[in-house]
Length: 281
Ligand SMILES: C[S@@+](CC[C@H](N)C(=O)[O-])C[C@H]1O[C@@H](n2cnc3c(N)ncnc32)[C@H](O)[C@@H]1O
Image (tube, rainbow, N blue to C red; front, side):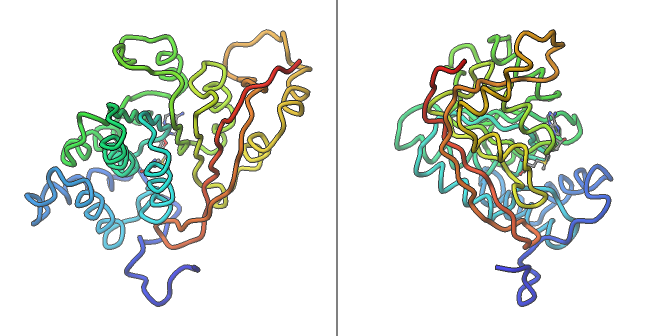
């Protein structure tokens, strides 16, 4: 589907040069807390998502995954029935609410306690996200953690005080990458090194067509042999931990799945299932 000319009202306002952090996130929270339908919105994740979409369509663009690409992912959650999802890049909590809700529905079939952890570095965005997750009635499943993701990932792997000690944290059943596009590959590699992603994990990366992410795509599609060869010159180098080499032995089955941005433009997510670990040099 191309950007809709027939039904522009279905889509968010277009993305402009300034697209976040100009007060619109607080305006969104005000819009929802003063919404005439607030009593019906409370404790209904679908109604909170509909109200966020209403703001995106009628007030201002929001950089959410949106209903169309979001459905690609909720369909995968319904089929694969993960119990744990780790998200990098939470913004105002749209995907946390959508996927946390899908996780809760899937868990009624599995009987396992679901857990959705969203890592967000901007404290203002995280505050809005926490408020909206709470209005949606998902506090028991969704946790928002504030800070740069690499510090949070290290703390999770160490089983730090916030890691949720009574629950199995590693590896995560699903990882959703939706933060700075240039960091996807380096941060996936850190998750691999820390054992947060391992055989059995599904990694989903957003914005793979718009703007696209060639380094990331090449990595998840490469064989363990190729990944290992690429690492060889750097093995044993001194490192400050800023750049990760990953675990080249991990094998992914990966595919690109198209879906629309909330603005109606075509995009895609890369869905990569980690299916094995082989020995490499
Ligand atoms: C595209 S938005 C996320 C949208 C959200 N997943 C949704 O669909 O509702 C990207 C978010 O990633 C956050 N971010 C960027 N780099 C980050 C990092 N290194 N650690 C944590 N969050 C980061 C930004 O602050 C921003 O809120």
